[in-house]
Amino acid sequence: ADSPIYAEAGVKEVEVLRASSLVSQSPSAVDTPLQVAFGAAQGSELMPVLISAAGLVTFNEAGNYAVRIKLQAGRTGASGTSILLSRLLLADSQYGPPAATKLVSADVTIPIESRVVINATAGQTLAVQIMRDSAGSNFGGIFPQAATVTAWGTAPSALLVISRLEAA
Image (cartoon, rainbow, N blue to C red):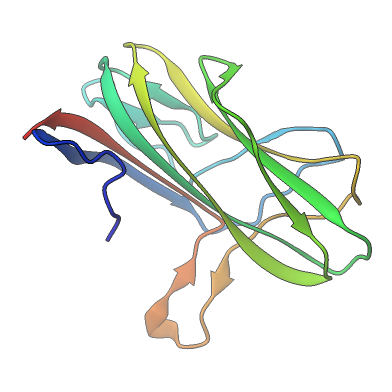
């Protein structure tokens, strides 16, 4: 279970969207952002939040939302150090600072987690991007990881959870 990211008396989190991807996603070149996809489209205009298959979130109702993102950054093969950055775009503008991970070995996976509270207006959009920085090598992306014990399932390459903050 996810722990609340907004802990204040009289406020509760109500999950309105949970989306994940089980496919590898990698930028096409250094310094070229890639919008992260979170699986199939979900929701409709009648729900507080919806997401397209391309990973674009639309807030249909204004309000305060807790947003959690988990990306499984990694690479296979190659040499040198890769630098993978991620960022949030709210209404096409960067929201907060980016997160960065240095991938220094040929077979590595490192989770990147971001948690923010957004005061969204109706119709506002949210997207997640990743990018390989040209200060590093041109390798890396986000990757799922299947457990050997199948009952454990697969860690997704990308996970997005959005909760609406409401009066308790």
